[in-house]
Structures are given as C-alpha cells and as structure tokens.
Length: 250
Ligand code: ADP
Ligand code: MG
Ligand code: MG
Image (tube, rainbow, N blue to C red; front, side):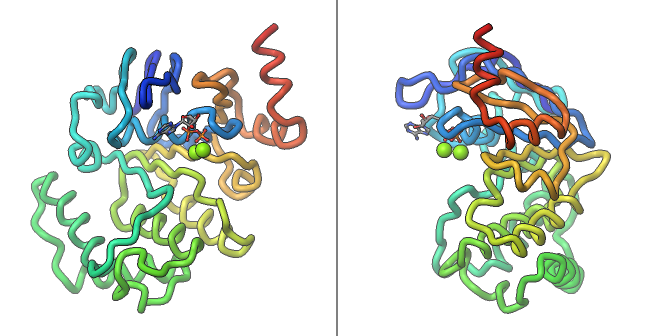
C-alpha cells in the first residue's frame, strides 16, 4: 500500500530524514518508535504533504501512485489521512460541519453523492458513542476549548467517520489518562481492517499494550535502524534505545 524508499527530507536547511525506507501493506499496523527529535513526526507529516518539508531524495508511493506529485488535499482524498498532532482551534466552524464536509469531499472524489443528512447523523452518533464522547461535542467549534483528551478522541472520531485507507496517528496517547487512552486505543483497534494500513507514531510503549502492532520500527537520527514485531516495543521499554544504537554502530 505505502512504499517509502530512501527518503531524505530537509527542514529549514537541516536534513532530518536521512534515507528512510518503509513498506506498509494493507491490513498492517506499524508503530514507529524512537527518541525525541528522531524524525518520527516529520515522516508522517511528509507523507501527508504538510508544508515546510523538502524532499531531497527518495520516493513515496501509495497504491502505486507517486505521492510526492500529489497536493495535500489529493493525498487526503486518496485515503492518506494524518490526525492532528497539535490540533489548531478553528473558531466558528462546528465540528459536525467539518466532519460532514470532509466526508462529502471524500465521497465526491469517489464519484458518490453527498451523504443524506439522516444517514450522516446516524453514522456520527454511532461513532461518537464509540469514542464515549458527548453528542453536544458536535455542535462545538472545531477544537475550541477542547481538553487534550477531547482533541485526541476527536482525532480518532475523524478517522472512524472518514475511514481512510492509511490512518496516520502521531502521539495519540500523549497527555491521556489511562481511561481515555483505552477509549482511544479501542477506537484505533476498531479501525483495523484488511484493506487499511495504520501508522502509529509513539514515543512510549504503553499505547502498544492496547494496540498491538504487526511491526515495530525504531527511528533514530532520520533512519530506521531496527525493525521487529510487537516484542521489540517491550524490549525498548525495558532497555531503552541505547542498545539499538550500539548494535547499529557495531
Ligand atoms: P520526533 O517526532 O521524532 O520527536 P520531529 O520529526 O518532530 O521528531 O523532529 C525531528 C527534528 O527536526 C528535530 O530536531 C526538530 O527540532 C526538527 N524540526 C522538526 N520540525 C521542524 C521545523 N518546522 N523547523 C525546524 N526544525 C524542525
Ligand atoms: Mg518531537
Ligand atoms: Mg513527534
């Protein structure tokens, strides 16, 4: 589904990704772990097409399409969706309208008509209940005055409504208490599907107790230096990152 090959990315003249290679197949959950500043957020941002990143070498393809040739909106419509790491507040735009507009844009891109209002309401209410969110949330402005936990839940709610082919989630566990984290993890687990890839960026292992990944990659200094199964996350939790670096150096 997604192939990243020898990706080099520069931010403000500084090389952040230094030859990163990663393949995600449909049906797989990949966790990207690594120390702060390694380039984890940069990777998901570059795939999503955020501004400010310059690809100097390498390629990204999604279902055979050259992602680097696509605009940010095209990427989202093709099914690559990145949740907000630090969601911005958009005063005046109600959450429910944003969700509906995003869903209808996706449908239009697939040659479908707008979703009928009652059908949309039914869908969104179902997903809101799944995320244990209050229905009044839909009438609030986008992220205005949301708590950290609400923002994270909202991020998963968007994914549940929009059903992207590739869901990219960056640090969705940061700042969550254990109960909120379980709700978020349950939401992500319900996104798991044979035709969907999930890219989870996380600094901490604890999220992976609840969302068990198929593959774990250690990203250090702009490169994936080690890959393994879910066990690797546990090993990182108990041993830290230094041994991976020593192994790489050796
Ligand atoms: P991680 O998510 O692994 O903590 P990031 O991808 O956020 O790492 O950042 C990797 C490196 O790139 C860091 O050294 C960071 O300071 C730098 N960086 C990221 N975004 C920017 C930016 N917009 N401007 C300047 N430097 C940046
Ligand atoms: Mg960071
Ligand atoms: Mg980050």
